[in-house]
Length: 319
Image 1 (tube, one colour):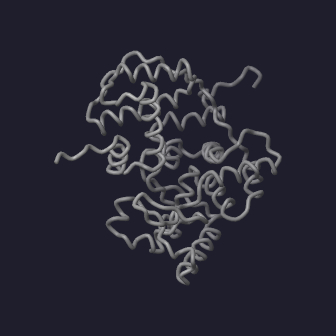
Image 2 (tube, one colour):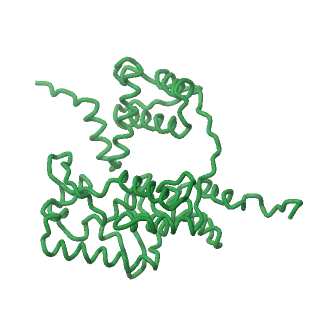
Image 3 (tube, rainbow, N blue to C red):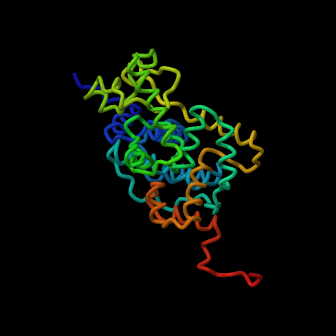
């Protein structure tokens, strides 16, 4: 009997996991693939090609007024679908109407403002926000830290599987060493005493969980900021995930209001402020690029414009 071909959703999931993409990337790619299919009245992507992709991307720009980055995300999802899943490379999709890409400078805080917001926080939220500002982490990267990612001897934090599926290291602020050590020690004691929080394993990368089924119980793999709730992984196993980023985002918004700061501020603002503070104090821009994990120096250079350093030393006639 001829074996039935898996559903498209299952094919996409399998290829994503073979390529070790993150869960967030998987959700994003499937969202745009499904959107593309619905736009073309449920026609299977195998029966479509560059022309239909062109129509979809142009419609997003003209009728939905999506941002340039959003249109790029949709394109990347469809390129992945045709290239990796269907093995039908798209090639040239023709003259797509591109979304306008307005140049916007990131909102940054002063050092004093950043500290005021952090001081309005407590518990894990305060420590996470301190890492966003003190180490330049993205909120997802901070929430996904594990015990083994902290090197107290070298004062280094390892970010694993960051944006673009890249690993990198960044600095560990000296002022946070004591708090982080206490946090890890509390985790170690609870783990050693077999607290109820450690009855179930933590979630692990898919391949690792299959190869080392007991690794989820090991101390080094424990989340630094675990979720209070249990979840079920794709194999049906009960696991503990890391703290969800939305709870941190909500806490930072509330703290910003409590601190009386009226700038449009979120978790990522701490990362912007980290970069501008380093540049303001003379850190080489290449070093800042490495700490932030930017693949393109031009992404880092936008912070020189925030500081007003993008004019090659030109002075105003008024001084």
